[in-house]
Amino acid sequence: MPRMDLQETLSMKDNEVKSDLLAIDDLSERLSEIIDWAIRIKNDEEALFDFKPLDGMSVGSIYEKPSTRTRVSFEVGVNRLGGQPITLLAGDMQLGKSETIADTAAVLSRYMDCITYRCFGHDDVMELAKHSTVPVINALSDLHHPCQAAADMMTIVENLDRVNGHVAWVGDGNNVLHDLVLGCSILGLDIKYATPEGFEPDEEVIARALKIAEESGSKIFGCNSPEEAVTDAGVIYADVFVSMGEESMDRKMGSFDGFQINENLVSNADEDYLFMHCLPAHRGEEVTDEVIDSRNSVVFDQAENRMWAQMSVLTLLCNEAAWQAYWDLR
Ligand code: CP
Ligand code: NVA
Image (cartoon, rainbow, N blue to C red; front, side):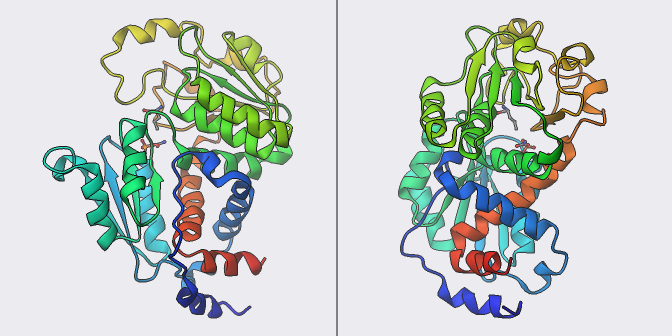
């Protein structure tokens, strides 16, 4: 199909049913296609000259917490797809002060074609999605970070030829781990996570991942030993020990002795292991400079892939016909 024909697909947009992305398993078996689409457009220098699937659309992004990667990758990504990104800092909005989430959702749905939301409680993004008539994307909640997982899975797929071993997580049983486990279970990757006692991941999320793994064949294993998790690993993943919103939990830090990813710990992994981190990294806490700056580290590829993976998701949710037309060009 000639590239200009892609524009004609804009008129085929079907808004009757909206889909949301609140956790990575909302994408279920389409995750693999979404990643392949993102990898294709990342390597297709000409595509975005005339492929503007979000032409005439606006994407609003609400932030209750700080952000560097999510905010910039959404703003640039929406712009590259021909849409208008609008960043809304929650502190400047009526939301949470004189207006409910439900009313905010109804109002923004009249202006926007998609809403992204970074919030504290996961219930809040569920509430926004329930009352919105346009797709809602979770841009990080206390329970899930699906945009991060989409980019993480994309980064692993890009490097599959050098990944020789399971995915290992060392750290807190947090939002990033939840979607990493779900993402691995969808793609059939094995994952071993080590968390301190009392900081294990959410049982309901792990139950969902185990259910998906029954189909995909992925093996999911949790323990409290960093050495056990990283031994023979092909990927080692780290995140901060204290997440946004938990700053008052000072005592939490004391539970992570032995959970730093350093040269001694990674010596147990495959020598070509990938070091991954969602960033921002607290260097000297969960990871040393030697590891994050080593040849094994792909942390800045992960950060870049946030944009490409989100462009794939945005196109799919806002203009599936255009997403499909680009896919059919492969
Ligand atoms: N990884 C991530 O979500 O980064 P930001 O908090 O900077 O958006
Ligand atoms: N677990 C971290 C991820 C930051 C991108 C947090 O929620 O603060």
